[in-house]
Length: 244
Image (cartoon, rainbow, N blue to C red; front, top):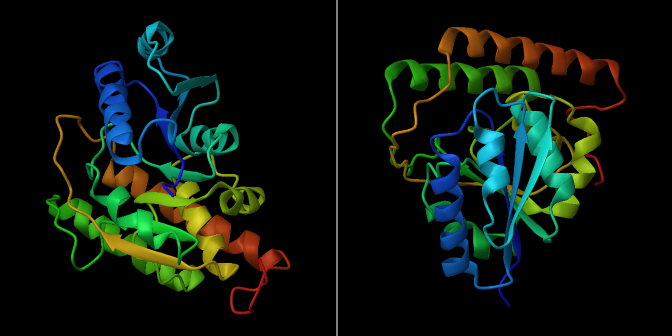
């Protein structure tokens, strides 16, 4: 039996891409999963361009729209998880950076793993990124190993999991920024959830990255340090088996 998915996507200042992006996502999910086996959950959060007005004008089938004034990728993703109606969730971007390779690979693996991550750091992944982005990713992975003993190399790729699994993790994951998906993976590892990273092929798009290596890198370091302190001050032990 085909799994039923909610494709969760946050949008912020995406007036150039949101209309076409949602159309492509809807058609792809229909082709792969079949009618009635998917929905698209779109959360717009505080855009300063015409994104919200464009979304309000769209009437795509099986696409559900939500709005929050609170800015931040993590805030929008958290809302999407809560609003999703299907038993399985995919957290991904509006521009489909990995096309559909990740979903097709993840589908059978979800019978054996609790969380599947489309990983840019997988040795079999085929991607083209600038040296600065590659270097930033390596430093970030090193920080995650040092702070949390995290074996997952790319906690910011596409995430596939049961909604029930993600809902159990949400109380620990309160970041409103891009660190949110890293929180999901950190606590999934702490609570011994079965995780597997899968290779992806990165499809270059016309969409310009909003990532700033210096600014965002410093923010991620602060987030890692803050999360480490939070865990150390709580009753959670990173090296003790937890029943989830």
